[in-house]
Amino acid sequence: MNKTAETSWNGVFILAEQFAGRVLPVSFELLRRGRELADTCGTTLSAMIFGHEICRDGLQELIDCGADRVVATEAAELEHFLVEPYAACMLDVVEQYHPDIILAAATTTGRTLMPYVAVKLHAGLTADCTELAIEADSGNLLQIRPAIGGNILATIKTPDHRPQMATVRPHSTRPAERVDGRSGEIVCQAAPADRLAGRVEHLEFIADDSPHHLEDADVVVVVGRGIKKGENVSVGAELAEALDAALGASREVVDRGWLTYPHQIGLSGKTVTPRLYVGLGVSGSIQHLAGMQTSETIVAVNTDADAQIFQVADIGIVGDLFEIAPALTAALRQVKQDNSTTK
Amino acid sequence: MRLVVPIKQVPETDNVKMDAETGTMVREGVEAIINPLDLYAIELALAIREDHGGEVIALSMGPAQASTALREAVAMGCDSAVLLSDRAFAGSDTWATGYALQAAVRKLGDVDLVICGERATDGETGQVGPGIAAFLDWPVATYVCRLEALADGRARVRRLVEGGWQVVDVQLPAVLTVVKEVSTPRLPTLRGKLRAKAEDLPVWGAADLDVEGDKLGLNGSPTRVVKIERPKVARECRKLVATDESTTAAAIEAVVEFLQQRELL
Image 1 (cartoon, rainbow over the protein chains, first blue to last red):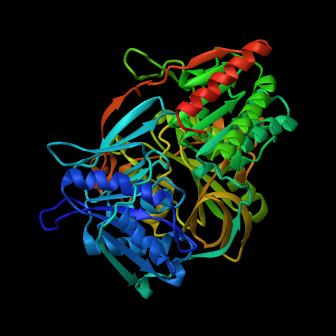
Image 2 (cartoon, each protein chain N blue to C red):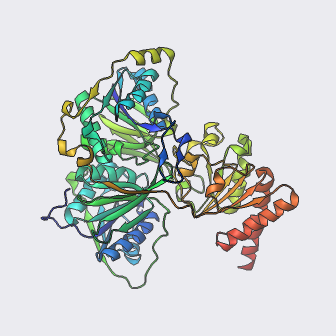
């Protein structure tokens, strides 16, 4: 909507996410971002959440970790993410509170709901931000995001429309910590029944039973074309196990059928920002780098000393991964064992 | 079935070179291609047409050169293609792009499905697909990795989401955005290429669409790019060379120590 004098747009809102009634960790990363912005603007931070029978302790935890207010809209129809009822409820919250800024995580939910709602509001929306700030004189939200495979950083703002909306790359900041003695208001409201009708029906959720999922793993081990054969995926899998990590793959590995598509990292796969990324035989094509270069620490193993991956790595070993990876796995298992005996 | 596939022409990212001095993209000699994820959308649409009959229309917004991408889509098997091209569309952000594309979908009329690639490899926003759905007030399913059934005016699709897959049933008309796993794109055939060359591509401007001028292009775009910079490369890779048993052992020791220092173990 156009920023007009009649409406005053105020406060920072984050979209907290839940699954099966439990507040998801990514919500706390948004609280950290939102708290910083709210403090800079001298305004309040609210968390909105949509679901069914959301755990009350989880709502309190949002307060404990930085929210001044939690607005929880509940209905049986909101148990699973469906864009139409979620969008209707989010528009209701915007109508009630007129937030100046809305942040959501760049998850499959955030990246579906936010553009849908932004269109309805004629609001500006920036995708997948890695940094956010407030412009000193105007008070506008500066939204900073990588583009063109991470080759540029673009700063985007929304001068004349409100609310200012952005999705934020998961893991691009740490979750907010609990602060003792914080208090805030928890508003639980039933979703307006007439807004819940949708033309999409949830039929089933099929859980991926692998122990770690790429999107929320702290540590990711990735195999590239350098593993040479499908059966050699085990070299990466063993290192992943030793590091308690999720297993990812470059596009070549998935195209050859050595691992399935949900493992793919890069422009045509997933974007990850783990604390630790370890690449085995990953050359580092521009598409791959786009999906992982904001990882906190990057370790690479490759036979080619000029491989692109070394340009974004913190530490790398030039050599044969079939020698190095098993030795590294053994060394890490030893460290793990030492750690557990000293504890 | 009447299917529309909005596609985007993007630079071939395999060959993106950045000018180290200016921090801008070197466009010379960089080939423009159909956004790779859009190929999966085209293929899914063609497969649906093969099973259910109907037609597939490729749609793109951009300068006159974007017709190359549309001809490629026709060469793959799309029945026809429409280019939206007008100075009035220049400077569109995702909001204004969605607005123009949905107006074209309305003009085409009687569309059952709009199928988009999940995002484009240059802008990487993934916002236009859900945006088109919101403008049309149609349901949308994003991150679709499999079409499970299509019958009785409904599509059952599987969405690839965090921690697993969500299966949903979507009432048509609807918008789907798809990921790579949904299909294996076919190559253009020689016959298709010849047809694409001969095909008369309609070009629609703002005047051909039922649109409000102040919602188009830069004027209709709520967002503004205020700065483009080259990311600081803060990392300086410490490269260890492992050629034999002892250098391998030393390298591994160094890596483990490094990870310990960073409190990652």
